[in-house]
View (cartoon, rainbow, N blue to C red):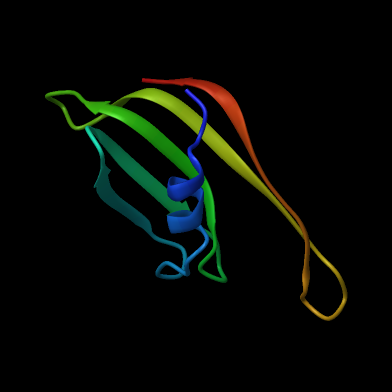
Length: 83
């Protein structure tokens, strides 16, 4: 499952610093882990099992910044299955 453009647009917003946030996107549950600046860096997308874990896909984000803090590269990569 590839990330859709509208989901990527929603992941570019700032989240709470160094937290895990859960929300629904279409029929899937999405769990977002943020870094110390509030950027989404890890995303789990799938169905929630009875014990609260997500069974689906795991994505990781590459953010490269220059010395002034401007984002040079912003790329999401699928890292495999999440269970």
